[in-house]
Length: 233
Image 1 (tube, helix red, strand yellow):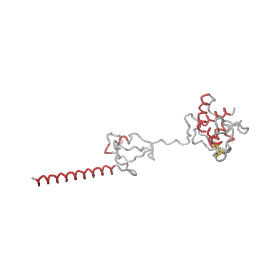
Image 2: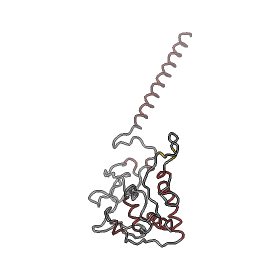
Image 3: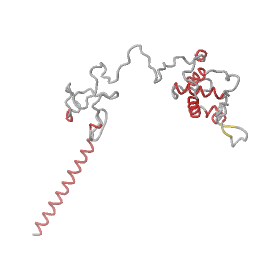
Protein backbone atom coordinates (compact mmCIF):
# COMPACT_ATOMS: atom_id res chain seq x y z
CA UNK A 1 0.00 0.00 0.00
CA UNK A 2 2.86 2.36 0.87
CA UNK A 3 4.48 1.62 -2.48
CA UNK A 4 1.27 2.41 -4.33
CA UNK A 5 0.91 5.74 -2.46
CA UNK A 6 4.53 6.59 -3.14
CA UNK A 7 4.12 5.84 -6.85
CA UNK A 8 0.99 8.00 -6.94
CA UNK A 9 2.86 10.90 -5.31
CA UNK A 10 5.71 10.56 -7.81
CA UNK A 11 3.25 10.38 -10.67
CA UNK A 12 1.44 13.49 -9.43
CA UNK A 13 4.72 15.38 -9.06
CA UNK A 14 5.74 14.41 -12.58
CA UNK A 15 2.38 15.53 -13.95
CA UNK A 16 2.67 18.80 -12.04
CA UNK A 17 6.19 19.40 -13.31
CA UNK A 18 5.08 18.53 -16.85
CA UNK A 19 2.16 20.92 -16.54
CA UNK A 20 4.46 23.71 -15.34
CA UNK A 21 6.87 22.97 -18.17
CA UNK A 22 4.12 23.02 -20.79
CA UNK A 23 2.71 26.26 -19.34
CA UNK A 24 6.18 27.79 -19.44
CA UNK A 25 6.65 26.83 -23.09
CA UNK A 26 3.18 28.18 -23.92
CA UNK A 27 3.89 31.48 -22.18
CA UNK A 28 7.26 31.78 -23.95
CA UNK A 29 5.58 31.10 -27.31
CA UNK A 30 2.93 33.73 -26.63
CA UNK A 31 5.51 36.32 -25.61
CA UNK A 32 7.67 35.61 -28.63
CA UNK A 33 4.67 36.04 -30.93
CA UNK A 34 4.21 39.57 -29.54
CA UNK A 35 7.64 40.62 -30.75
CA UNK A 36 7.62 43.19 -33.53
CA UNK A 37 10.25 44.46 -35.91
CA UNK A 38 10.50 45.80 -39.43
CA UNK A 39 7.32 45.00 -41.33
CA UNK A 40 6.23 42.46 -38.69
CA UNK A 41 3.99 44.18 -36.17
CA UNK A 42 3.66 41.10 -33.98
CA UNK A 43 0.44 39.56 -32.71
CA UNK A 44 -2.40 42.08 -32.70
CA UNK A 45 -5.36 41.96 -30.36
CA UNK A 46 -8.55 43.06 -32.14
CA UNK A 47 -6.73 43.85 -35.41
CA UNK A 48 -9.76 45.65 -36.84
CA UNK A 49 -8.95 48.42 -34.39
CA UNK A 50 -5.51 48.86 -35.95
CA UNK A 51 -6.35 48.46 -39.64
CA UNK A 52 -8.86 50.84 -41.12
CA UNK A 53 -11.06 49.56 -43.92
CA UNK A 54 -10.98 53.03 -45.47
CA UNK A 55 -7.99 54.37 -47.40
CA UNK A 56 -5.32 55.85 -45.14
CA UNK A 57 -3.06 58.62 -46.50
CA UNK A 58 0.07 57.63 -44.56
CA UNK A 59 0.00 53.82 -44.70
CA UNK A 60 0.69 51.70 -47.73
CA UNK A 61 -0.25 48.02 -47.51
CA UNK A 62 0.03 46.91 -51.12
CA UNK A 63 -0.33 43.16 -50.50
CA UNK A 64 -3.89 42.35 -51.50
CA UNK A 65 -3.83 39.16 -49.39
CA UNK A 66 -2.77 40.92 -46.17
CA UNK A 67 -5.26 39.99 -43.46
CA UNK A 68 -6.98 37.30 -45.55
CA UNK A 69 -7.41 35.17 -42.43
CA UNK A 70 -9.53 37.91 -40.87
CA UNK A 71 -11.52 39.01 -43.90
CA UNK A 72 -15.19 39.29 -43.06
CA UNK A 73 -16.25 41.76 -45.75
CA UNK A 74 -16.74 40.86 -49.39
CA UNK A 75 -14.77 43.54 -51.24
CA UNK A 76 -15.72 44.00 -54.92
CA UNK A 77 -12.13 43.65 -56.14
CA UNK A 78 -11.45 40.65 -53.89
CA UNK A 79 -8.68 42.09 -51.71
CA UNK A 80 -8.27 41.06 -48.09
CA UNK A 81 -8.96 43.01 -44.91
CA UNK A 82 -5.73 45.00 -44.45
CA UNK A 83 -5.12 46.10 -48.06
CA UNK A 84 -5.48 49.89 -48.18
CA UNK A 85 -3.55 51.17 -51.19
CA UNK A 86 -4.95 52.97 -54.18
CA UNK A 87 -4.23 50.84 -57.23
CA UNK A 88 -5.49 53.61 -59.52
CA UNK A 89 -2.53 55.78 -58.57
CA UNK A 90 0.84 54.86 -60.12
CA UNK A 91 2.56 55.45 -56.75
CA UNK A 92 -0.17 53.66 -54.72
CA UNK A 93 -0.81 56.98 -52.98
CA UNK A 94 -4.09 57.55 -51.19
CA UNK A 95 -3.66 61.34 -51.18
CA UNK A 96 -4.67 63.18 -54.31
CA UNK A 97 -1.83 64.62 -56.33
CA UNK A 98 -1.81 68.43 -56.55
CA UNK A 99 -2.84 69.51 -60.04
CA UNK A 100 -0.08 71.09 -62.08
CA UNK A 101 0.36 74.87 -61.94
CA UNK A 102 -1.86 75.30 -58.90
CA UNK A 103 -0.98 77.47 -55.89
CA UNK A 104 -1.97 76.63 -52.33
CA UNK A 105 -4.07 79.18 -50.44
CA UNK A 106 -4.82 79.36 -46.75
CA UNK A 107 -8.26 79.22 -45.16
CA UNK A 108 -8.81 82.92 -45.95
CA UNK A 109 -7.95 82.44 -49.62
CA UNK A 110 -4.62 84.27 -49.27
CA UNK A 111 -1.79 83.39 -51.62
CA UNK A 112 1.60 82.42 -50.13
CA UNK A 113 3.90 85.30 -49.20
CA UNK A 114 6.30 85.52 -52.13
CA UNK A 115 8.68 88.35 -51.22
CA UNK A 116 12.22 87.15 -50.48
CA UNK A 117 14.28 88.10 -47.47
CA UNK A 118 16.04 90.98 -49.26
CA UNK A 119 12.82 92.54 -50.56
CA UNK A 120 11.99 94.65 -47.51
CA UNK A 121 11.63 97.84 -49.55
CA UNK A 122 8.92 96.24 -51.70
CA UNK A 123 7.30 94.44 -48.77
CA UNK A 124 6.86 97.74 -46.94
CA UNK A 125 4.26 98.75 -49.53
CA UNK A 126 2.11 95.64 -48.95
CA UNK A 127 -1.21 96.47 -47.31
CA UNK A 128 -2.54 94.37 -44.46
CA UNK A 129 -5.48 92.14 -45.44
CA UNK A 130 -6.99 92.64 -41.97
CA UNK A 131 -9.19 95.46 -40.76
CA UNK A 132 -8.17 97.52 -37.73
CA UNK A 133 -11.00 96.27 -35.56
CA UNK A 134 -10.83 96.12 -31.77
CA UNK A 135 -10.96 92.33 -31.91
CA UNK A 136 -8.04 92.06 -34.36
CA UNK A 137 -5.92 94.42 -32.25
CA UNK A 138 -6.84 92.53 -29.05
CA UNK A 139 -5.81 89.25 -30.67
CA UNK A 140 -2.61 90.92 -31.85
CA UNK A 141 -1.82 91.92 -28.25
CA UNK A 142 -2.22 88.33 -27.07
CA UNK A 143 0.16 87.16 -29.79
CA UNK A 144 2.61 90.00 -29.08
CA UNK A 145 2.67 89.08 -25.39
CA UNK A 146 3.43 85.46 -26.30
CA UNK A 147 6.05 85.96 -29.01
CA UNK A 148 7.49 89.46 -28.71
CA UNK A 149 7.22 90.97 -25.23
CA UNK A 150 10.19 89.05 -23.77
CA UNK A 151 12.52 91.02 -26.07
CA UNK A 152 10.59 94.15 -27.05
CA UNK A 153 8.92 94.83 -23.71
CA UNK A 154 5.20 95.32 -22.97
CA UNK A 155 5.14 98.76 -24.65
CA UNK A 156 7.59 97.97 -27.46
CA UNK A 157 10.36 100.06 -25.90
CA UNK A 158 13.01 97.34 -26.31
CA UNK A 159 13.13 96.78 -22.56
CA UNK A 160 11.89 93.19 -22.33
CA UNK A 161 13.62 90.85 -19.91
CA UNK A 162 15.64 89.24 -22.72
CA UNK A 163 16.65 92.62 -24.10
CA UNK A 164 17.41 94.26 -20.77
CA UNK A 165 18.94 91.25 -19.04
CA UNK A 166 18.92 90.77 -15.28
CA UNK A 167 20.84 92.34 -12.42
CA UNK A 168 24.31 90.91 -11.97
CA UNK A 169 24.84 90.07 -8.26
CA UNK A 170 28.61 89.95 -8.81
CA UNK A 171 28.70 93.46 -10.31
CA UNK A 172 26.11 95.82 -8.76
CA UNK A 173 24.59 98.22 -11.27
CA UNK A 174 25.43 96.01 -14.24
CA UNK A 175 23.31 93.55 -16.20
CA UNK A 176 24.01 90.05 -17.42
CA UNK A 177 22.34 87.92 -20.09
CA UNK A 178 21.19 91.05 -21.89
CA UNK A 179 20.52 91.04 -25.64
CA UNK A 180 21.76 94.52 -26.45
CA UNK A 181 20.30 96.43 -29.36
CA UNK A 182 16.58 95.61 -29.24
CA UNK A 183 15.04 98.77 -30.73
CA UNK A 184 12.31 101.02 -29.38
CA UNK A 185 9.29 101.02 -31.70
CA UNK A 186 8.87 104.77 -31.08
CA UNK A 187 12.41 105.61 -32.14
CA UNK A 188 12.91 107.94 -35.09
CA UNK A 189 14.10 105.02 -37.24
CA UNK A 190 10.99 102.92 -36.66
CA UNK A 191 8.07 105.18 -35.83
CA UNK A 192 6.96 105.41 -39.49
CA UNK A 193 7.45 101.78 -40.58
CA UNK A 194 4.43 100.14 -42.21
CA UNK A 195 2.53 97.03 -41.28
CA UNK A 196 4.01 95.38 -44.37
CA UNK A 197 7.50 96.18 -43.04
CA UNK A 198 6.67 94.66 -39.65
CA UNK A 199 5.16 91.56 -41.26
CA UNK A 200 8.26 91.05 -43.40
CA UNK A 201 10.66 91.41 -40.46
CA UNK A 202 8.63 88.97 -38.36
CA UNK A 203 8.77 86.54 -41.28
CA UNK A 204 12.48 86.74 -42.12
CA UNK A 205 14.09 88.57 -39.21
CA UNK A 206 16.39 91.59 -39.37
CA UNK A 207 19.61 92.43 -37.52
CA UNK A 208 19.15 90.99 -33.99
CA UNK A 209 15.60 89.89 -34.80
CA UNK A 210 15.40 86.20 -35.65
CA UNK A 211 12.89 84.90 -38.24
CA UNK A 212 9.54 83.72 -36.88
CA UNK A 213 7.83 82.73 -40.13
CA UNK A 214 7.89 79.07 -39.20
CA UNK A 215 6.38 79.67 -35.75
CA UNK A 216 3.68 82.25 -36.48
CA UNK A 217 1.03 81.92 -39.18
CA UNK A 218 0.65 84.72 -41.77
CA UNK A 219 -2.68 85.78 -40.27
CA UNK A 220 -1.17 86.04 -36.80
CA UNK A 221 1.82 87.99 -38.14
CA UNK A 222 -0.55 90.58 -39.58
CA UNK A 223 -2.37 90.78 -36.24
CA UNK A 224 0.91 91.43 -34.43
CA UNK A 225 1.75 94.13 -36.99
CA UNK A 226 -1.60 95.80 -36.26
CA UNK A 227 -0.90 95.81 -32.54
CA UNK A 228 2.67 97.11 -32.95
CA UNK A 229 1.30 100.13 -34.82
CA UNK A 230 -0.92 100.93 -31.82
CA UNK A 231 2.18 100.88 -29.58
CA UNK A 232 3.81 103.48 -31.81
CA UNK A 233 1.01 106.02 -31.30
